[in-house]
Image 1: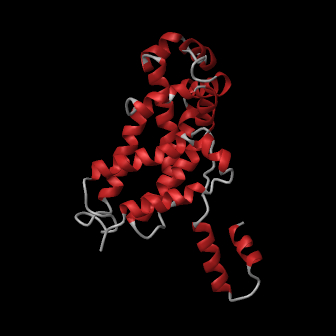
Image 2 (image 1 turned 45 degrees about the vertical axis):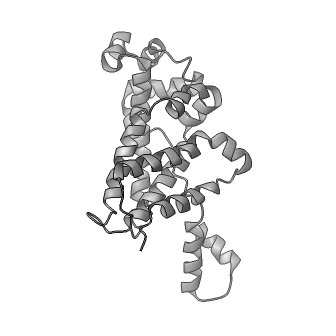
Image 3 (image 1 turned 180 degrees about the vertical axis):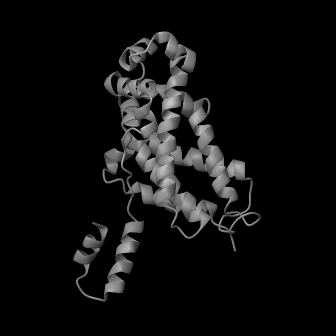
Length: 232
């Protein structure tokens, strides 16, 4: 589709120049990932039931009893594995985010530097997470459920994301990697990346009201790339 648009913009020039323009155009557009419940969610009756309950009634009206009924298991089975609803929801979000991250990482393996891989992986993940049915539902009907993760504490899913980003930063710093990422405290830099990127997710409804085509996400990639870029 992208190459077709590039061909429409210019019917002249060599095949090589058209391909170059198409690639340049593609790099400036948001790259939405295909979003469905992950295989791990679908294969686990309890996680699948939790997913469906949140989509149907939201987080506040989801109960462990309802999840157990939907999953066809006893309430004690759910309690033994997850203790309470917040832990169950956290487990679901962790599984879903891991799936989005894996896909985003795979899509960006061809980026030439660790810095570019990180910037585009974070951007693709944010774009996908913003459009994820669970996130859309929570932001639409239970936005207060997310408020503690913005103003009070980091959740387990956020902490795992910070750990992953820190590993990617280390892989690009000169001491251990390709030198494309500036030197600095990798843990602090990872926290900065996550806090910045998650604001695009939590503000998705406000952003989409003025940017329905999601053109803001390439700007996030530029922002992260500039923040991480090694100074020569």
